[in-house]
Image (cartoon, rainbow, N blue to C red; front, side, top):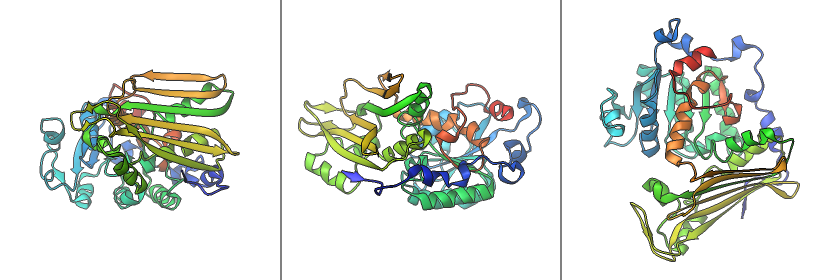
Length: 388
């Protein structure tokens, strides 16, 4: 069992030192220009220019973002970036939605950002902050807000405080917003949990469980959870970090920060979910005794007690997918979403639905708990921005 925090780590005091989370008093110096200033919009929603969007990364998740975003009123794609030579030069729409959008995929980020001048960049290239930091800094320099699916960016002050501080300072200097989100981390096991505690006068413990039928997910996800592996091979991959859900520590740290809890540490355990009968997805066949998926648990420790427990079970052939939140408190809460939330669909929804909130948010590096209440929006996105 691996501890992610040194003993005595004061998470709340560490986070409270970040200038970005303090309310800005001198708006003329710290707040970023509104979209209307950046794109010289006219009065009246009907006259507003569309939000200019660049898709950074056209893999499985990036493609889902595009599919949902093109259905939205008030925004349009002005560029797309990917390093895959089989995608470079092709139309973004043909790669994602089956029809041309008039936007060619390029691998020249610098030229694209200079030419396209995006208001917001949808970023989906990696899970680890140290790997994507240069990408984020280049977008910040170009003056675009960022909504990223990078798991560690959802609450980066725990694992990557130095990088987080650098990104925050650079974003505030350039008067843009950097934001990481998704379905998990980003919503079902952190933001939804935080919102649910609103009705409680007291909370002693939090339990959140996500049980998924991985057969419904894309092949990269099924591989990531170890479906089809022998048990020994699974354990080897766990030990070298290849198999694990990225984001549990971030979710726990976000919940603790929102509740004002000072954690002693965070622990994680990853175990295989073994198939009892043969099961087949559209990609992988699993025999009895092989690994069908992952059973991963993380705990937030405070005063020697496990006060936050997150459990993810994702495996092929799961008979009862669901999301559940149990809060031991006053009043006690027991919330279940039957059949669960489809990961890829929900990730695209969360990212795209947060765009207007991010555009109107304060400058710097922010998280889901810093946004005003997010929601779906089925009108013109520019109406949200204009009303803010």
